[in-house]
Amino acid sequence: MNAEVKISPLTFPVANVPSTASITGRAPVHSPEERQALIDEIKAELRRQDAVLVAHYYTSADLQMIAEETGGYISDSLDMARFGNEHSASTLVVAGVRFMGETAKILNPEKRVLMPTLEAECSLDLGCPAEPFTRFCDENPERTVVVYANTSAAVKARADYVVTSSIAVKLVDHLDAEGHKILWAPDKYLGSYVQKVTGADMLLWNGACVVHEEFKARALGQLVAEYPDAAVLAHPESPEAVLQLADVIGSTTQLIKAAKTLPHQEMIVATDKGIFYKMQQAAPNKTLIEAPTGGAGATCRSCAHCPWMAMNTLDNLLETLRTGRNEILVDETVRIKALRSTQRMLDFAKTLTD
Ligand code: 13P
Ligand code: SF4
View 1 (cartoon, helix red, strand yellow):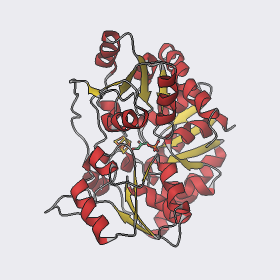
View 2: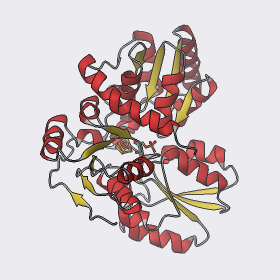
View 3: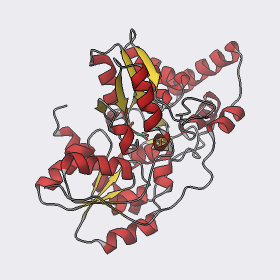
């Protein structure tokens, strides 16, 4: 069966997306000595405070390196949730975007969850406010509600299941086999990709990632012609025409694994450029090429860097550790409801073999 994709006409355009350039321009520039002093002080604070740093692949190489060197973790959003849930530290410091900190708090109410900044949002989360989303669900009561992890705690509280890109196809396939009709939110590109692979009956919320939506299929096609032996790796938040050119579609962790295991020497990568820090470590002898975001006439070939991830800096990480500011708090009634759908994600992930 191959049900048609239905996309909700509702859209919530995201106002005030900070430009990466303006954020980078505001981030303090440090001498090598100042940078090292900040890194040393952050490491000492992490020890002093029984804290562990959990960083997403899209954060800066400095933050990823600190996580790596202090027994913390760098990963995709599913594994960030898993790691925080299993680690014994009393404080989790989440370098990423707000929904990642909220997920950590939903799963670990007894732990203090800090973030370098509370301003780091996500266009998918911002484009799916709880009130209209709840109405959308109420209007479609026959559907099982599956939401991407890139959502607020309030949206997770209304959902039956939470998923990340690493397990979305498998979970929807499983629900489809059980006869469920799905209401999916918020990423229409990921939703539409999952629908095509599984054939499930899916009604989609009309949201998108401002970073991945910018990848350009025509320019990517030209790059593929320039590098005919390269493999194309793409995150499923990218538009359908881009995914059609991909050899591997997967979460950030899955793309890094593919870079390592594929026989190709060259990889064209359609996701945030922060991923190159770990991808190059995993595949040191391979050539990694950024997929194009700029069409003809653009001044940069690829501007794929999440403006909110870029708000996490050495300075605000140290400030947060010193002051305890930027603690993530989730209303307890909302948290208990959101825990149900989020825990289902972890429980389902446990049943998978890879
Ligand atoms: P991953 O779960 O693949 O890390 O994706 C999170 C994200 O926000 C990608 O834009
Ligand atoms: Fe959200 Fe896109 Fe940034 Fe990921 S890259 S956090 S989906 S805005």
